[in-house]
Amino acid sequence: MTDIDTRVESRALDSRQAGRLAALFVEFLCTGTAPEGLFTEDVFCDLSLPQWRIQTKGRDQLVALRTTSHPCLGTVPRHRVDVTDSGLVVEFEERWQDGGESWYCRELLRADVRDGAMSEVSLYCTGDWSPAVQGSHAREVTLLRP
Image: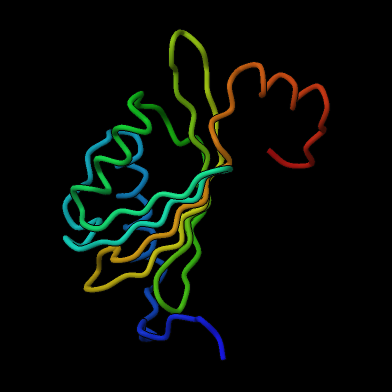
């Protein structure tokens, strides 16, 4: 017996629909405002951080979580979207300025889609990398890809 949630029916998106939702999600990250059609009103969010986990229910709570945890707006210099049987996965990086310093994080979003909008999202975040952490990483690790 497993704990796998079987409530989600297979209803794969096509790549165009997934790309549209990913673009709306990137817009949300960059503006702090959720575009119309991105989330269902009752969207459930499960955010995992390096040493913390937070859940919200409803569009307004998810937006509030984002704006309180990331009050500084930034950019998403790179992202990738993949279609799943129940929605999409978006791998992305964020960069922003805070206190005159450049910050960075890498994240992964897995979203179930209902009626063309994200209805359940799981977000996994590396945590916010300060300039000191980024510098240490650059000195100690040689990445094979950006």
